[in-house]
Amino acid sequence: MNLLAPSILSADFSKLGEEIETVISAGADYIHVDVMDGHYVPNISLGPPVIKSIRQSTKSFLDVHLMITEPLRYIEAFAKAGSDMITFHQEAASDVTETIKAIKSYGIKVGLTINPNTSVSVLDPYLKDVDMILIMSVEPGFGGQSFMPSTLDKVRYLVEQRKALNLNFDIEMDGGLSFDNIEEVAKAGVNVFVMGSSIYAMEDVASVTRAYKKRLKA
Ligand code: DX5
Ligand code: ZN
Image 1 (cartoon, rainbow, N blue to C red):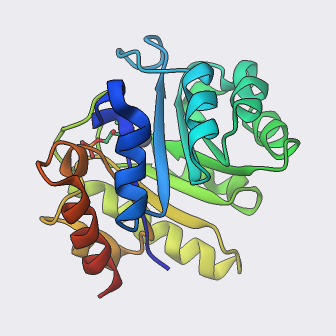
Image 2: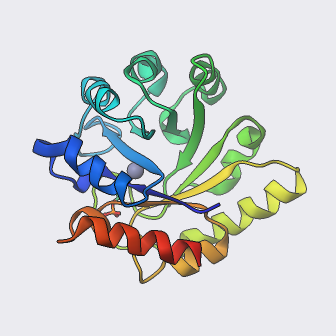
């Protein structure tokens, strides 16, 4: 099933609860929460206290994307804040297996992700242990960048591997998604679509969310 995951990075943080409610009422499946530490990526966004507040105001599925160095140090904090899934970068973790284990120990889902310049084969040892692979289709750090079509080959590789190994992880894509490319992205095998600026920078957030949901169903 195709799932729509609006990224609140492009939302108005002064009315975050409302911004989340708008997309959920319009059919969004996940809320994608981008955590940036100013070290692994050059930008700083938000941390566990904000996720805790979001958790108190919504029951929706919180898809937390950690763009932070050594994520293992903060798994407990992000799990206890109320994340439903924590996705971290292979490049940022010195022990990927331990980090996966730590996330699972809280009974929540685990995702693993790579930057556009990282080879997809680094994920091979972990495919059997994760609920989702996120393929970054822009350099992480900022919303509103252009989609990199070359990253779709990684999606095709994952689809093949998933079949060959009889696994069932989801494949998420994040960065530069819009009406211009989601059909191509879905065709390659992505089933979880992160969208920041193409939803939250739009005038009518609810109707654009409904339109994306409709397009992803077709
Ligand atoms: C980028 C973040 C994305 C970002 C996507 O580092 O991981 O989730 O919000 O924004 P758009 O959809 O505008 O590219
Ligand atoms: Zn993200």
